Amino acid sequence: MEDMHIHLKTGVTDINIMRNYIEKCRELNINKVLFLDHGNRMSPKHIPVLNTPEVIKKFLENIKKVKNEYKDMDIKSGIESDFSYDEEFKEKELKNITESGVDLIIGSVHGMSKAYYKDYLKANLDMLKTYPLNIMGHLKLRKEYEDYKYLIEEIVKVASEKNIIVEINTSDRSRWNLRQLEYMLGLFKKYDTKYTIGSDAHKVEEVGYHVQEMYDKIDKILNNAKRDIEYTIVSRGTEKYGSKGYMGITKEQGGKRNLVLARHYDKYIDTYKDSFEILDKYNIKNVAVSRFELMSAINLDSITNLINEDILIIGFGNVGFSCLIHLLKNGYRNINIFTNNVKDFQKNGLDQINKIFDSSIKFVNEIGKYNTYIEATGNSDVIKNIFEITDDNTTIILLGTPRDESYFINPLDINRKNIKIIGAHELNGHTIEERRKVFKELLEENKNYNFDEFVSIYNYELNIVDKILQNKNNFIEVIKYEI
Image (cartoon, rainbow, N blue to C red; front, side, top):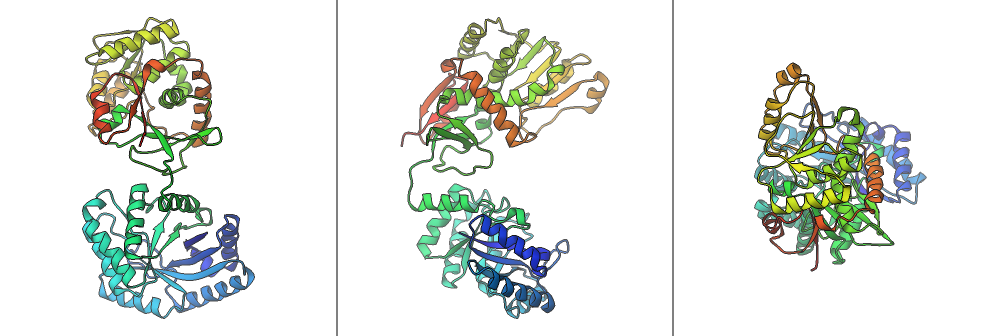
């Protein structure tokens, strides 16, 4: 296994730091590495490292020493070179890299994150044509990459013609998603272009970041492996704002599944970073309900002292529904629900919930005065309405995420009315370990409940997103792939 993009920083001249990097590589079973750092930098905010003969000489001396010490490792020396159209900078950097004596030169386009994507791609193409490179570093595929496939294909073609290797970068800054990886591997095959894998580590803890996972993805794509993901949990609210998926549930393997970030069209797992391991004894409907309830559980359980009886839940989609379940499970009963244009499926669903929990929750016709408001729509106008209606000393919990980007919260209202506001929808404020612990607890709790009435399974179709939005006869949606 290789990691062909590792920045040493001060380790270029400190052999003990270099040895620490090598030991980390061996720990991860990485036996081929490219140690490097930046040459001259265009940005004044970034400090050049390998840009003087003295530093480069010391770097190469240390590389030679560790090659002798670690004969089981294939260790290469390198420089990551900035590309620029500035002729003075370009002349200086070309002199630096051609006289350096390192094994490999990576060429990368930096500092164009705000440039038009077409200009960024054109810069990569010009770099390939004018710099003496061995590797092209971290080509970024932005959201609009599909509109510029002709330029991306030209980049891959020129790289092949000039025998320049294209890097598959695994850092969070430049990693391709699965569709992009499949597309690029197709181009590499078409033009017989060589590629390498690099973590772009800037400290020892980042060595090998996502490298093994990238090997697994590439292997599955090249061998046309069977689909990893069997189901996708869909949030109807998220779908309205253009999402193509929510969370994927993998096929059972060894009595276990994984709940992972996924999109409807994903064939393979994209990341294990925020995954949850699920025992196969928990059925898919339990998993779906528990996943949505997680948002309420992990947030509301920490602020029970602020949640007074006399509660209004605003919105009765996936988030509001699962929030109601969680409140009822924890003994709250003085709850009302407000939602515009109550549908028959929502009435029937509430009837079922009242039977399960022996409760008498009901819908109300307006947002009145309550002690606690739980906002589950993510609609800025609704949030504004709550602020205008509420009395002093109330608690407002924002379970919904406003995606319309129109925010009406007035800080003066918060002060004048002494309102307590808790943001609670997104899970980013909690560690993955904390989330996994709570999720497992919910799975165990919910196995005792029958949620069949609230989960539907759809067959996979190309227009599945539109169909979900049209066919609103359940609360929690689960898509099953059958292709």
